[in-house]
Length: 255
Image (cartoon, rainbow, N blue to C red; front, side, top):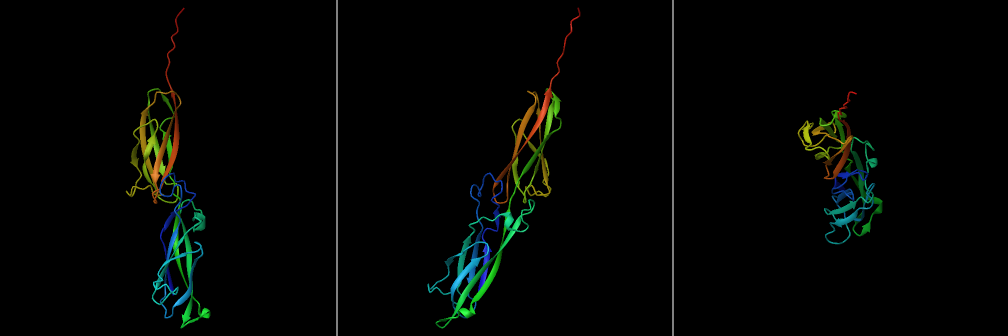
């Protein structure tokens, strides 16, 4: 007997991820496994049971074409298991590394009892195993914002610089940076390999310039939105504060 096991969702999201929208919000999609059990021996098998060390109890789908509840020679039975307890990065290797995805390896096992004529042979029980891997990711995006001067005169131009990084364990794709008091925010550089994703070793830079008149201090907020590899949306915010002062003339009259 042979068992073949596949991960139908080879990459899943850690439920502790900070996604704000997307296919895993509000419910994270679980890992799903498919098992194919093949009788490549010379005797039919009864009491065919599939278990999994991580996914609980796989359920039978199809394959028993003559409905005799025996895995006949050359028959292929399919089983499926949906992970009821969501995988987290703590379940995989490396565990809980904020900069690396975790890989969970689990084992599917099938047992069956051969039938010789009409006699079950439990002393000749057949066992087969197969493994599959599921990657658990937790993307994040971070935003840092600075002003080229934090103390200016009224009417001066201030240029803000925004730095976007992938602060999780996998790349993210920014949809852009927005600022509540400065527009437009323009991309400058950072996409070294041109793949349109902020890779873990990249920092994307944006800039925006504004003329400040007050009232002082001028506090403006920026936000970045980015999409992870599973299509989920992430956000980060940053604030910059600039003090604005004006000139006043004092006239003194001679007595």
